[in-house]
Structure formats: structure tokens, C-alpha cells
Amino acid sequence: MSYDSSDSGVWRNDGGVQPHAYDPYLHPELFRGVATRRVFAFLIDMVVISVPVILGYVFIALFGVVTLGIGWALFWIAWPASVIWAIVYYGACIGGPSSATIGMRVMDLELRTWYGAPGYFVLGATHAVLFWITVSFLSPFVVLVGLFNGRRRLLHDFVLGTVVINNSVRAPVPQAARPY
Image 1 (cartoon, rainbow, N blue to C red):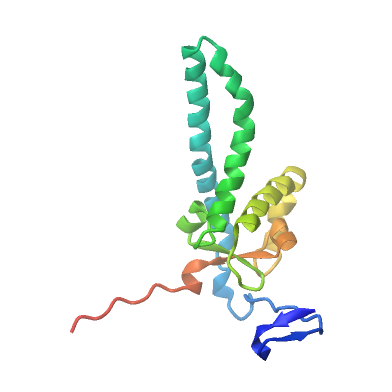
Image 2 (cartoon, helix red, strand yellow):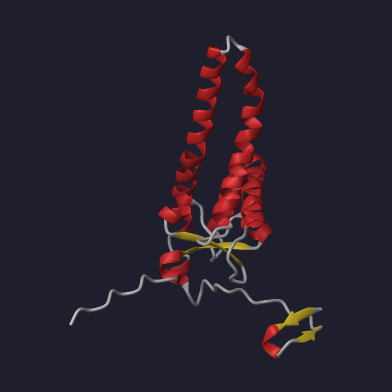
């Protein structure tokens, strides 16, 4: 049973599923170059995630020297903190108003659900976790799946029901007013 807001607040029991919001055959420009841009966005995001982690390790190392080795006990918390930082980064960025990580924003990409809704924190965090799990076990297949479908969705995109689109095509920049 689902609620249909277009029928003036009536409930429907037809099992209706929302159609895909982004059709690669009607709007191929939404998916043009997405696979390549995702690679570069991933690399940018890895730099953004790695910088605080490296600074944290350097701090712990220096703190250990200052405390004559006692501070090095913090190294046991560095790896779990790094994982939490990455999950929070993806969740906060994809759950933010632009539905994109910093790398995705630089490459002008946006993550949406298959029916067109913007991302949210849990979706972003789950997207990151599922990406790392699938890459760990099915490394080449995760990327190869994207080469054989019109929406350029990767394996974890299919599982989560997400799609990455060109943001510049979806939301063109408004023209500046002409001075008369």
C-alpha cells in the first residue's frame, strides 16, 4: 500500500513503483563522461580523506615522542577513527544540499536515487561502505558493470538504487542579466 500525493491524498494498493527519473535514451547527456569523472572524483576524495588521517598519524607520532612513548598508545585508535572519518565524510557530503562529495562537486557530478530524490546521510554512508566491500571482493567487476549499462551505474549503485549524473546538464547555470 502506498500513498499517492497526486490523487488528492488517497491511498492506492496497486503496488505502483515509481519510474526511473533519468532515462539514458531520452537524456544521454546526463550520463556522458560520468564513468571517467567518477574516477577523478574518487581520487580527489581520497586526497581529501587522507590529509586529516595523515595529520592525525603525525600528531600521534609527535605526541608519543613528547610523552616518552606513552602517547603512541593512541595508534590503536587511529585506524578505526580513519574509517569513521571516511564514513562521516561520505554521509555528510552526499546528505548535504549538493548530494555530492567534494570530488564529485569538482567533477560536476551528483548522486541521486533512481527515482530522482537527492541523497541523504545514511545513503551516503552506506554507499561508501558498500563500495569498499564490493571493491574488496569483486574489484574489476565493480567498474566493468558501469561500462555495460546506459546509466553508467556501478555494482553498488544497483544495490542501493542510486545513479550519478552530470550536474551541469541537469541544472544549467542561469544566464546573467543583460545590461541595457
